[in-house]
Image (cartoon, rainbow, N blue to C red; front, side):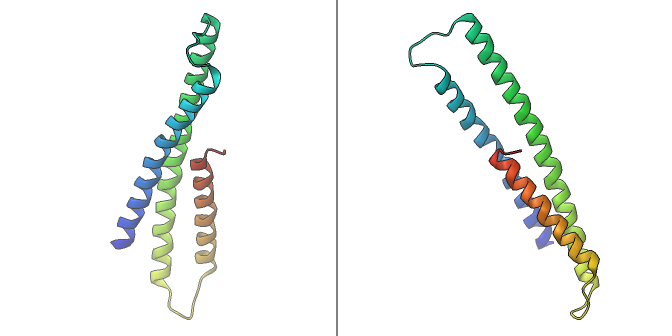
Length: 118
């Protein structure tokens, strides 16, 4: 039970951290594009609007990927725990090692996606 609650805490942490980083990126892009006090031209406004929409869609897709990957991570971790519960101290299955490697690879992928590098 404790393992499952830790998994959920990890999942919520991942989902909560992503939106904060997204809003910071939006502010940086806006401030770099326009100078203070300068009104953009209609073409520039349209370009900025399209950039924001594209960034929003990309962020939504990244958020969906993160959610899917973290759910899979929780499932894999649960499966690993079940495998370990079935073994004793003198036996370690190849499946357990493969499952641990799969978890490690997926965890790195989630970490990279959270940093913003696809």
